[in-house]
Image (cartoon, rainbow, N blue to C red; front, side, top):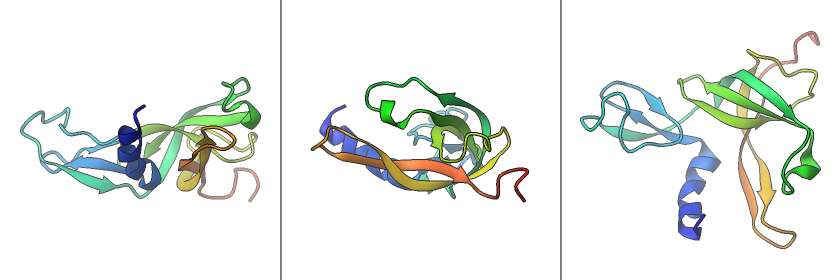
Length: 136
């Protein structure tokens, strides 16, 4: 990825910013310039998501690329945001507590680093919104 493209994406990664079509009301993440529902007649505006959602499905990654190997095992899930769009993100919780339907909220966390002396990347991950099931 080019350096300019990387920096343009930062505000979306750091703030969970997508877009909303003012014609049909659909929300999009990542941001879009054209609404797939309305096509070219749409009016697209930036939208900051609340960061609340639900786990649709998940997996526990035990074998990862070199960059993420020290973090294994970790939970990777598809999250449906309250506003409608779905995205893939890491969920930070005990592996025994993750379940489909779990309510989660976004948090700002370290995603990785380019090298030992390189740039550190930050972005959105998710954590449980309430106490884990069975631990009330």
